[in-house]
Image 1: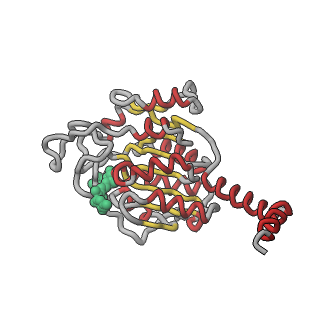
Image 2: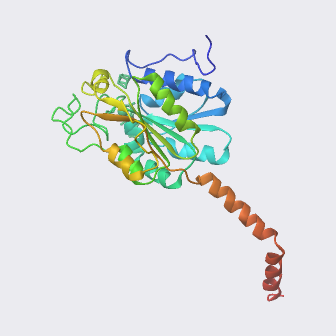
Length: 285
Ligand SMILES: Cc1ncc(C[n+]2csc(CCOP(=O)(O)OP(=O)(O)O)c2C)c(N)n1
Ligand code: SF4
Ligand SMILES: [Mg+2]
């Protein structure tokens, strides 16, 4: 069956078995099932294996600098609010080189979806520790083991009142699609951290490692409770929760821009303003 978002012209350069394949499929099917056409979607990425994803779909694409997908996505959404804008990249690109943009986008709340392929490693550059690598994580690039403590992106986003925070697993395509649908249709900054096995450079966090640990948050979890969401985000190790941890609907940055612009126009349009202006100008005549 021909799918709207398929892009058969580009050869996929990922290793066989890479978790990115599941994410690509889930994203294409999600966009199609949500009723989007390729011309209504913009995918913005940085540099890395995950950042190649937009090339493998048929949609509008902006592939820019490492770590800089969020500000570009934000600007596109601010000027073309009718488009579905998705920033998509790896854990290094979003949380490392792009960490500053990630933090400040949470504060500003643009209506964009941020998809992070979290393989807990720098895949493209052959296995250096990324911000989410476990302490002690060893590859050829750091045979002595990673010395840094891993960043918890969910806890960080929830603690800062991000408007939508979720975690998914690339090995469960239907579950991932369900979460992607909720994130893409949510109005505001929506983070989906996607656990993505890198079969070549991360021999610890494998498909089976995740499969043994992941489970979905149940109905007993209230995603509007920030403290409960934060507590669940700290769970990692033998049990790893998936699903929507936190939802905090609030005005988006674009809405605030439009509201302010309208208010300024109203002020300029009022008789009151004209009277004040004339009075002030008369002092110089
Ligand atoms: C400013 C800058 N720093 C470093 C690099 C080199 N570089 C390119 S991709 C990459 C790591 C990508 O890792 P991640 O974002 O986790 O994506 P993955 O390849 O794992 O999907 C690095 C360090 C670069 N291109 N630009
Ligand atoms: S190096 Fe890892 S992340 Fe990159 S394509 Fe291969 S398996 Fe996927
Ligand atoms: Mg990575």
